[in-house]
Image 1 (cartoon, rainbow, N blue to C red):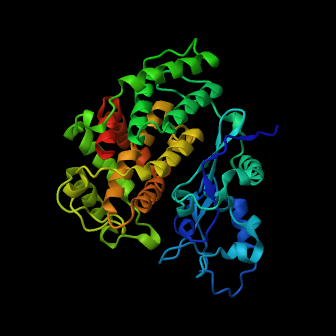
Image 2: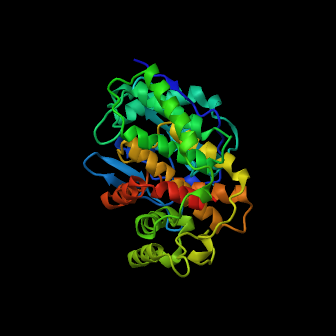
Length: 418
């Protein structure tokens, strides 16, 4: 059965601008079949390609591999002009599937695929290129290839957990996501308040039994809750108290230390190259005092205290952030397989937690215009969201639940959204 592509991110544009950033960072899974096919190509005496071996084991039991990177950064097939040598000589169809699909993600939603985007791609973050809707035919082909690649179709995905106790039918998951997207795109309010309304709606959902709330009844219920939350949620970020130091700020900075890193290959921060350096950097982030460790080369020399003060978050950055969260929610990229098998509500907390992280990073790029600073921050954060194994570790997920379990997440959103 052919499974359709639905709900493309209509607010998003993209074209490849050959910046080579993905070739510096992408570590997609390469199948045994792809490895053998590429090794059989004629690259004799090609000086644009690094010497063999070109592949390193990813999972020996599954016979999967990853493309190796050069010591100075970049895929072994990346040329000096930031072009893929495989594509130059043999066409895009010969490239590994992971490379062809990026920056798209195809997410199973029962009877269809949804399309997500990786905002770690600079062109996605800056919304450059053609409308993504122009790529529908190509994405349909990719969905067929993905089914072959992973050995299952979209309708094989189990019903996701709303929380630890309840599952939702896929159609009802899509209804919930639709209401969340509507809230995020409601420009009557600043974005930080829209996200706090999303969190308030989620808190009500944790207390609701959905056994008799399906289909249209669920949609009506969610809209009614949304209307109530628009009245109850404090109007201004200053109306909320600051985050608690132990329950809010310390766990937040531990997670921030993970998101702030961007030190692979070309952007490697020399001062944290060793494991002990990373441990010390994490400890300094947890304390939140003194000079910020340069866990990526984009960070300036700045004190923690300088980034923890109100900065009057400029309204012009809301549109970029709105696009980011609308795409993540609409694509269902924030829970389940794309996000360490989290439940819907845990995944929503983890997604909204990126807002204070992005705002913190955006503040650190004070030498950039606000729009460029927030794009840079989103690229760094989305390089980790759903893909950095550290964020899926039990103790890090515990910290996310600790922040989201009370009102600390709302306070962090308000504090860094001021």
